[in-house]
Length: 280
Image 1 (cartoon, rainbow, N blue to C red):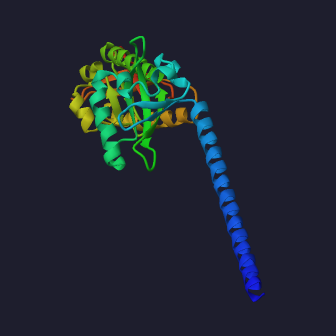
Image 2 (image 1 turned 180 degrees about the vertical axis):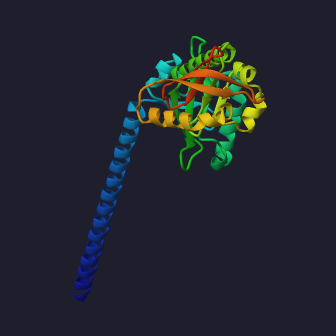
């Protein structure tokens, strides 16, 4: 009888331990499921960002293979993502003169991420052979040798900048070869640029300008107060006026001129050898 009682107690104790273990397993399973759900939610958020961003996004493997690309990749390169993912390396899309430095950065990023540039420009080769200027932003995915890259097409911006530079070049050519002396001064009366005719009219060289040259140096001393008053009036919104001045060459000789002032933030002064000097 005592043996049966003892056996019964052992069974009850084992059942209690078994129930406790089952509860622990159920709790562990719930935690695991919560972790999996959180991971899936995180992956969905990441995928949504990856697919809907305004730029081209890539995941690049250590061997330079493109393992994942978003839909915008096709509009940038002319290749469908299924033609590229797991099949092509990013090196196939880089203009050859940019390739070597980009390969070095790829390798350096995996050896020491802090030493590799995270953002720079390169030229991308489209499927049709045309080139596009790309701003690349790239970094290593923590805990891996893979990298995530964002590609922004800046071709239009680069072309606009080039057109602006060309326009400025043409302007400066015209500015420099005009037969009338033209110089620009800032609000402190420092002459910041001058064309060839200025040097021919007043004497001096470009070296004098680089050393520092004031517009007041081409005015006779008795004209300085009048000029200062006229400039202050213009800066306060006053009307333009034709004013006669006596101007002075660097050799000390003087000549009369009519100055027509018009205020402008750049403080550009335009002088005509005929005697008309206008501030525009």
